[in-house]
Image 1 (cartoon, rainbow, N blue to C red):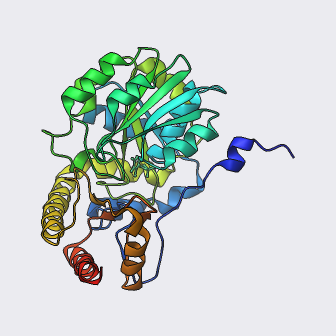
Image 2: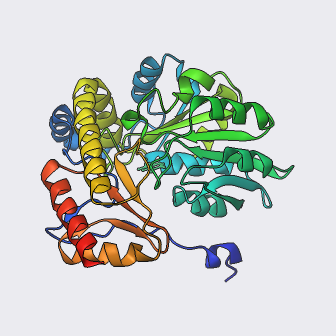
Length: 349
Ligand SMILES: *Cc1c(COP(=O)(O)O)cnc(C)c1O
């Protein structure tokens, strides 16, 4: 059997660990459970599941179009924005295509790029922030796509409006700029620009959003992108047929209607984020100010040991060996459990 060597060498995605009974602060999920109306809608739907879903996700597209003030031909959906990322990459990549992004960033980018036949070009962060100047300079005639993750996962840091605008102006128009706003709802609008509102009219800008984080639907798999109809028509073709299940479509429609409850939960998470940040700094931890629902502790060589210390005490956080630890903001009592362990760690080392 002939297998592509780029796949054999590729590192697999490392999912958050699952340990029964543990506090899970490893996957940036919403800690408040399903939205109430989503939960009741899902139980009504089970009898229809012997049928295929609406392949075009028509009602979901209508709801999203109304939400963003665009026509439905500007939107493509997928089984999570990870799938949409892959669809976009398949739309533009041919063997040898370069895909530029900051590193470290979302760990799906190098995987999805390689699977689509492209070559990842990973540009080191500066002070935990994507270095847009270096990323723009890394664009060559082989570059097809650039990812900007705003705010960045796992470092939680934003790109401001001025820097983003200068970058978009600098990148040639035939290069697609994908702005991944998975954590948009958690960001302070004065620190993190709404790329859809500001750059939605640019033919080479596509904005990614997901229902997995603030909308609490990570397990159902639904995300989308918004962009120019010319590119969106092709992105839709690259979707695996019927990948967004009927349950996912209906849950997303119901979730959009519960935007007030979403905003209430986001405000709780943001308040907890400020609190945990303040407490960690008081303990002597050095961490960037987060615009997401997680924090980044740049613990370098201590990252794995810190994560093991937490796991031994029933709290799962996410280590990036040699770099840092990503800690999702959970329920207040979960955050307190984490803070107690962070405090114990300080006295240990
Ligand atoms: C969580 C996340 C996503 C969304 O993933 P889904 O496939 O929609 O669950 C996309 N981008 C980034 C940067 C993320 O952290």
